[in-house]
Length: 236
Image 1 (cartoon, one colour):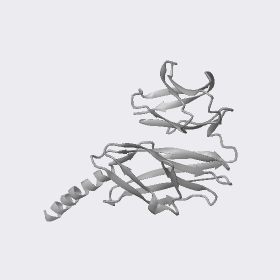
Image 2 (tube, rainbow, N blue to C red):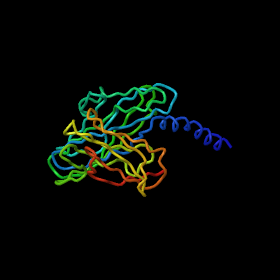
Image 3 (cartoon, helix red, strand yellow):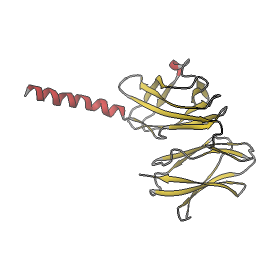
Image 4 (cartoon, rainbow, N blue to C red):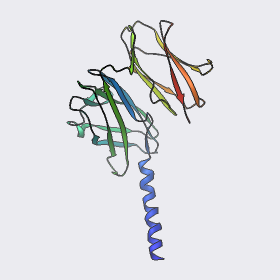
């Protein structure tokens, strides 16, 4: 009996630790970098503090493999850091219930074809058991085709895809005077949503929680001309 009592007590004691680890969620999912040699990509990391408390996290470690010619930078707003040199400077403060949108990863593809993965471990400054992980992988090719290039705009594919909460795409308006937008249509062509691409920004975040599960098509228009159409899958 004493053994069983100790066993159940140990389970009860570990339950708060498990719940603490779930309080911050990475809404954007794993980050996927893919492109050609010599290019650089910037991805937005979306976080949500699901607790009722303000929390501050610091970057404890960068784990995994990064090629000798690749470089990773972590940006918080306009400030960017090298995680190998500036580990102690990288910290995030999240208000209760906040969806944090100012965290970015920049990845330089380097000079050789390669692939790999890494992750970033963030830990609560007040409770080391309270943590979250940003996962990332990359693939560098000689003729990467992850981004679509037009004379007025460079734009990535939507990610994550499939998506169940938020989907996003990264872009650069080479010609800031061009009017660019993304439209989303159902599988049978019914219009679902439309988004203007702000020339002062570099990413578009789409909330798909109200979309029904299924296949959608998103189309890039530049100056009201249909440029390219691709598929988005939504799951619940």
